[in-house]
Image (cartoon, rainbow, N blue to C red; front, side, top):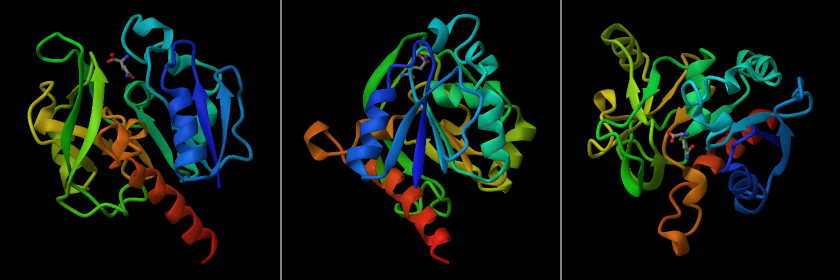
Length: 225
Ligand SMILES: NC(=O)CC[C@H](N)C(=O)O
C-alpha cells in the first residue's frame, strides 16, 4: 500500500506524518508537492497539519486552489482513503469533501495539549482498530479548530454515523464537541487532533498508531479478498 503525504507551503506536520507511515506502520509513503496534478500510483492520501499559506484569508482557503486539489478529489471520488489532519481537515472542508467549517476557538486562543477523545464510530476504515465508545488520548494544536455546521447538516451527520471522534470536554466550542467527521461514503476523514503525534508511550500516548494500522489493514483485507 502506498500513501501520499501532500506538502503545501506552510505545512509543518508533513514529516511527522511521513515517519508515522514509514516507521509506525512500515508502509510505503512518498511526499507529494502541491504543484503536482496527479496521484497516480497512490492508494491513500494524507493531508498534514500546519499553516498552509500562513492561514491567510481562512485556514485552508488558499490551499484549496492548489494544482494537486483535483487529484485529491479524484481519489476521494474513487473511494480511496483520504485523511486530513488539523490543517488537512480545514482544507477538506474548504474544498467541499467534508461538511461544515472550522472557525476560531471559542476562547480565541491557540490550544496545544493532549486531550481525551471518544471513538464514536469504530466501523470505518480509519477506526476499525479502536473500540466503539473507547477513550483515546490524542494531542491537539490549533487556533481554528471550532467545528461548525448548521442543524440540518448535524442531523445528517448523526443519522449517517459520520461523526467519528468527539472531545470528551468542550475544548474549543465545536458543535456537539465534534473532533472528526467523515464524508457520506466514509472514505474521507477530517480530524483536528493529531494521531501522528501519538505513536508511542514515550511521547505520552500510542493511541494514534491504531488509526494508521486500521487504514493499512482495511486496504490489505480488500486486496486479499
Ligand atoms: N497544527 C495545525 O495544523 C494548525 C492548524 C491551523 N492552521 C490552526 O491553527 O487552526
